[in-house]
Amino acid sequence: MSGKVIIAGLGPGADDLITPEVQSALDEATDIVGYFPYVARVQPRDGLTLHGSDNRVEVDRATHALEMAAEGRTVVVVSSGDPGVFAMASAVFEALEARPEFHDLDIRVLPGITAMLAAASRLGAPLGHDFAAINLSDNLKPWELVEHRLRLAAQAGFSMAFYNPRSKSRPHQFGRALEILREECGPNVLISFAKDVTKPTQELLTVTLGEATPEMADMRTVVIVGNADTRRVGPHVYTPRYAKPSASSA
Amino acid sequence: MSGKVIIAGLGPGADDLITPEVQSALDEATDIVGYFPYVARVQPRDGLTLHGSDNRVEVDRATHALEMAAEGRTVVVVSSGDPGVFAMASAVFEALEARPEFHDLDIRVLPGITAMLAAASRLGAPLGHDFAAINLSDNLKPWELVEHRLRLAAQAGFSMAFYNPRSKSRPHQFGRALEILREECGPNVLISFAKDVTKPTQELLTVTLGEATPEMADMRTVVIVGNADTRRVGPHVYTPRYAKPSASSA
Image (cartoon, rainbow over all chains, first blue to last red; front, side, top):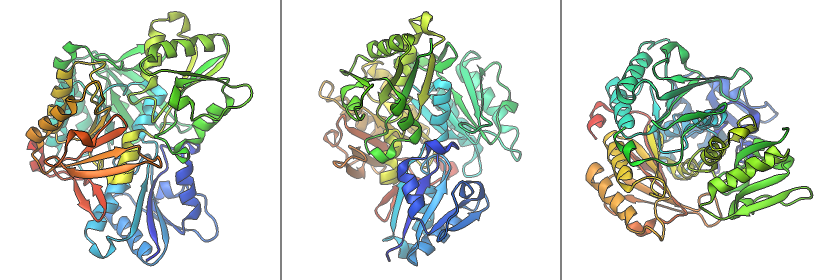
């Protein structure tokens, strides 16, 4: 088998955030596999077949990629952001686990700029100290576990980045998350909403937890919550690199 | 004032992980400011002045960048990895806070591939679910806070990435961190050591917490600890995207 699967991160949206490593992989691919809007970001050309698929079929899509690679194809599975952060890399390895005959396939993951770090850069440096990245969707884990993790992350004094904060199918959970954060952190901690980050439609908003409302987020938004030291300087939001001893009880 | 400060991430080491956005900034710079080995990664050219400085002078270096920008220069402050993750972005905003006369300066942060995500990509997808990023150095926070955060992150069931796990000046702390992780997570959770990730000298090692020893890490190593579900498949290490209800007590 000389085929391979490359799981590549396209970054959050702007073309100049695609690494040369990923661009080279796209240039040598015979097949591109991924969610429709991400596949649509790849330039069509002769010899390249685009396989767009719907959301929520990640393991089927990954299995298809493995099967084509086993036939000798050079398959690039595209993710937005970084494929290792709430994206396609784990889905490919889940599919691989179910198909031992593919365990010797050449599979590589190429990192990309993940949404929280793009959002942080546009805001300033709100993740400049210890932080946690949490997927707020309960599609693949119980909501109780999300609440447990929010409380412990707040008690640890982590800044936090939330992926998939809110969707039409679960409109109330993000409001509950905000309640928990206000309970654990108080009303004055800063929270930032970064929608369509690095795209022409980008919107950035920073308020306090006391001012935050659920409607400020949707599925195209990454949410970043600061720690007790996170502050504004000029138009920027940043978290200092240091933490005082008192922060351990924050 | 028409000068500006651009804080740019050079990624973990490989040139093909530098984004085109960052490359454009380097191409238009009049001055490059940073820690010596990072400045050495920038190609010298006519009209470009390189200002390398020593480690642990981050705020002095940042102030120098602000001062040059105020004089009309186009200054790029270079970080390895992503400037917003345990790197220069927060240091620049700390320096800015102390100098209100510079608050209107044009300051932009350009994201890069941070070491933990490059390491995760080379290992497989060990950060494929909720995770925490923790700087294990106690230069800027008390060691007790590090221990507190390790315990809460483990109790939350987060995978974890550790920056600056071990140095010559504090050789014993990483051993203590491993003890805490074994207490909280048990001996079977996977831990990976990624040294010089994406460089020609890259070394990757994955063992269990029971097998891990402090000597497996140094300051050039990023350490990634899985959660209770993190597993091997073929030569890869990955964390599934889902979590079972029982994981909330992990």
